[in-house]
Image (cartoon, rainbow, N blue to C red; front, side, top):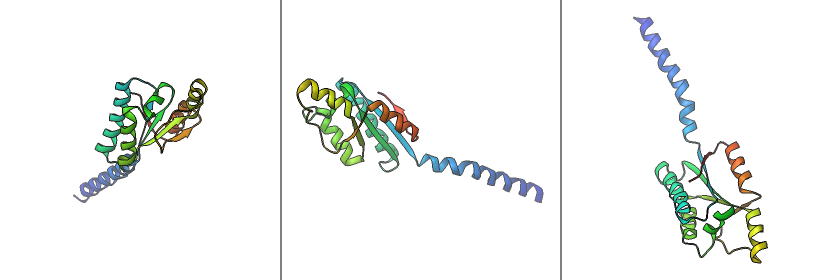
Length: 144
């Protein structure tokens, strides 16, 4: 009888040793969302995904970074309806947003200056490299 109790105790301890590390890993959730489309519906889907991740998992339980480059730049322009949604997600949910410096330079070259975009956006050398860096840091990747 003692042997059976010891075996059960050992099994429970082994299960905890296996489960505890995976439980702490679940607290370290991270998602990189790529936005490189000027399509308003795709932009809206990216923002809905970001909001849902933060709202369902908990704004402090997941890091979400929206990486914007190429035609996705239009989402950050002040006159774009999605720019106010992005700003709201940044303010309410702590959404991180980065924009490609190369995209901004290319836009400035074609249009004689950078567009007016919302504040609080980080500038990164390139959007593709930023996504790679985030994945190397353990971020999952999503492209709506």
